[in-house]
Length: 330
Ligand SMILES: [Zn+2]
Image (cartoon, rainbow, N blue to C red; front, side):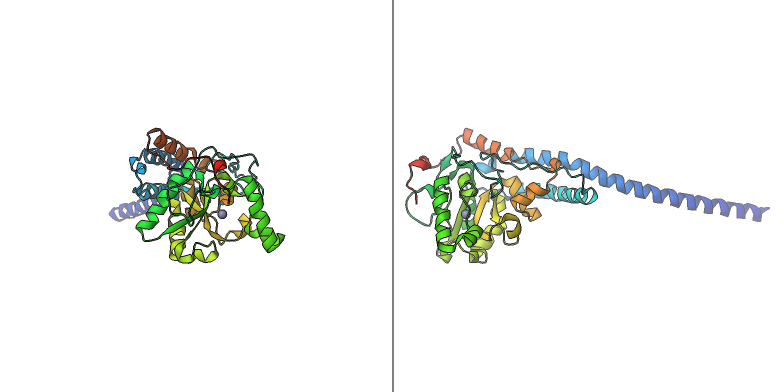
């Protein structure tokens, strides 16, 4: 009897063990998928909070600031977000609902290229001359940029200088008319086909937005050439520009997407949030608009609002604020 009871107990124990194992397994699986789902869902809220917190960072007001900390916080959140975004793209390739292209010339997120032209009558309303080292003396149309871009360019140059890199501004804003003559000059020198790779026709150039600038360094004689990308100044720019809201607009591995040859000297202001996304994803601006799901759109107005607040508080000033139209054209 004792033996029978013992055998019965062993059988019961084995049964409980098997059922328990199966239950545990199924719980583990469902728990795993629930966890993944929860993580994806909670990201949006986390990001909002981080953005809100960072937009109140008073450190941004001083020229000597280091915005890196704020950006790194955002980067950590964005890394999670990127994984979720990639997973979603893999799972539902046909149901993707991507953002629409920003074509507002007054927005820092505007896309200007051969497909998305800027109005020929557009003239930015807030052109100023950034207080940075230029490759020439005097003030010309090409010395001007939009205020927000100029403000962050000053900080970019200052940070480079702290790291021992002396950058120089070469060419920023160009009116529609100037772009016509610049492009025609390239066509005369190189022929139409080659000119198309290195120069934009009027209406398709970012220089008309006042948000970009060609930069170089004395070590390179201030010329705009590909080798800037292998000089230590150019490497520094490629690695750090995003912290100040700038990106290399025509990267070397994106020629097929941008339609332009590699231009390590041409940097474009898009705001810290968008610059960070492009940097982390290794995307050019075209790819951002092609690949970003609506829920992951970067809110560039937050960078614009933050700058407007700095202005309102009297923390933004430029020495030269004469209209670009009054400056001599070179
Ligand atoms: Zn350029």
